[in-house]
Amino acid sequence: MKYTLAVFRARTQTIMFANLMKSYNVPIVIINTPRSINVSCGISVKFASINKSIANNIIARRRFDSFAGFYDI
Image (cartoon, rainbow, N blue to C red):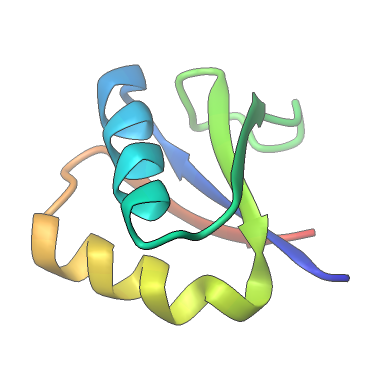
């Protein structure tokens, strides 16, 4: 299974995004951001890549100003 990481520069927005994903019944895990991605607050939201369209919609609607991008793993 392919996974995607949603990376943010602010912890509060990472947690807010995770809660919104959960509200759409998307299984998520909050993980430590890999060191190779050095633009984050230290934690990221991991979810199955098949749910990326839901994640894109959340990002577009909520205007997360600390959003650093999606990374496929």
